[in-house]
Every structure is written in C-alpha cells, then in structure tokens.
Length: 226
Ligand SMILES: Nc1ncnc2c1ncn2[C@@H]1O[C@H](COP(=O)(O)OP(=O)(O)OP(=O)(O)O)[C@@H](O)[C@H]1O
Ligand SMILES: [Mg+2]
Image (cartoon, rainbow, N blue to C red; front, side):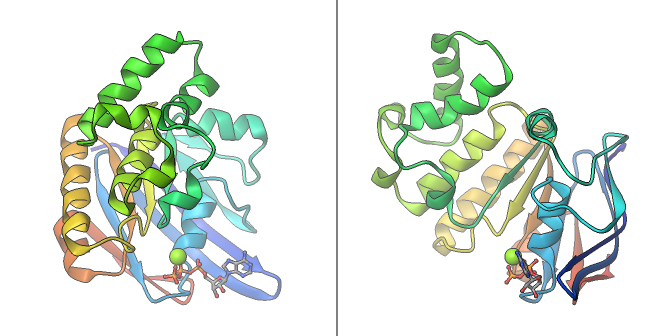
C-alpha cells in the first residue's frame, strides 16, 4: 500500500476555541477509513480542512506526496477537485435545484476538460447506470428524486472525474436503513472497481465496522484512538 493522505500536527481554532488539536492521520491508497466521535468533536471541521474548504492554524496536509496549501486559491480548488471530492449529509442542498441532472453531472467535466457535450452526456449516462438510476434521470431536476436517489446522483457527480479520494461527511445519516445499506454496498463495490480511497464520517458503529477497514475516533478535537 502507498500513502495517499497525511495530516500532521493539524490545529484549528474558531475564535478562541480550539476545535482541532494536533491531528495526525494517515490514509493509505485504497483504504476506507471511518471517522467517528461525538457531535462537536471536530469530524466535519477536519474533513473541511483536508478538502480546502477551511484554512487551519498550523500543521500540514500532504496529498499523494504533495504539500497542500493551507489556504486554497480558486486555482488550487480546481486542481485539487480532480483528485479529492466531498459529499455531504444533505444531497439536495449540495445540488443546484435550477440545473437538470445532466447539467449537474457535466459541470465538473466542463471545469476540467474540453470534452464534447455528447461525450460528457455519455459519461454521465454511464455513471447513472452504475448508480442504478434510470436513463431519463438526465432530463429531470433534483426535486424529482428521493433522498437516496439524490445521494446516488451526488456520488456520481463526485466520481465523474475519477478522484482518488472521496471524503464523505455523514452521507447516509438522513436516509432509511435499507437505502443506507444500498449506498454502503455501492461504495464498497466502487472501492473494489476503482481502487477508490474513502474517508467516511459516520455515527453508526455497526455500519462503520461493516464499511471501514479502520476506524479513527475523535474526542474534543483530538484523535482518541486508531
Ligand atoms: N464555522 C464555524 N464557526 C465556529 N465554530 C464552528 C464552526 N464550525 C464548527 N464549529 C465548532 O467546532 C466544533 C466542531 O464542529 P464539527 O462540526 O467539526 O463537529 P462534528 O464532529 O462534525 O459534529 P457532528 O457529529 O454534530 O456533525 C464544534 O464545537 C462547533 O461548534
Ligand atoms: Mg459534522
């Protein structure tokens, strides 16, 4: 195994309160690492520091051997978006309600390449099939789908540029148990097929034990074990 992500000595405060305190975390390529811990322990904040959505006070994040900047420029975001994608708990709020699913899925392709539209649509259709969604999904808008379907669309959008790392912040917590299981199995299949690496934030210990190779627990801004 080779190392994909290395977080070293990362500290972050909001105002006077220290939210992340000397975080060390290494994720190997192809690994699924669970991030557990009580509400407020800093899981989402850590995920956002890794993906460049938050700046931090000190420490470092290396991705694929490269030191990432502590403050991402717009160009850093574009460059890093090809390698790392994040999905969130509420898929509806992260998908633009005014765009069709075709436009939602093709948007990341437009940012990174000059692929002709018909090839973009072919790729999008392939991903929808892979996610078990019908072909007429492309012409519809986000409000026409259930939470589980939207999360599949969100995953398709995140994976369309074949990132190496997918950071998932409680992507299934709002879904029915049966739909949760479908998505967890889908993620396991994708790891197998694509060699995808996952950092997966969740609350349900049984689900984390099923999905993850290893679970890291956070407690009050520190890594408690793992
Ligand atoms: N933008 C912000 N401004 C100020 N404080 C914040 C901000 N985001 C998070 N915090 C604080 O940082 C701490 C960690 O929050 P974070 O959202 O990372 O926890 P979490 O482990 O993801 O919790 P949950 O399981 O509820 O999602 C909390 O005390 C929270 O109030
Ligand atoms: Mg959170």
